[in-house]
Image (cartoon, rainbow, N blue to C red; front, side, top):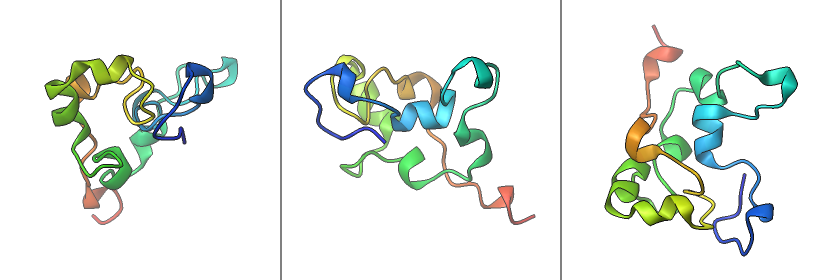
Length: 92
């Protein structure tokens, strides 16, 4: 997972948004949903490392998506929403 603070885009590998929404998209995984599709949500798929909801914070400060913040780099939480905990994924 990407560090919270970075000085270059080259330092940022997988962000929480990439994990939740897109995942790694190399030739082998093209068309495969992001990891968030199989995880019950909550925690790192709902809140940033400062304890704020991704979607609410990004809506209030859209510049975060173009910053080098490892929680928000190239993210679209304000458009997609977050992945809230869904206990019924496992517990039916």
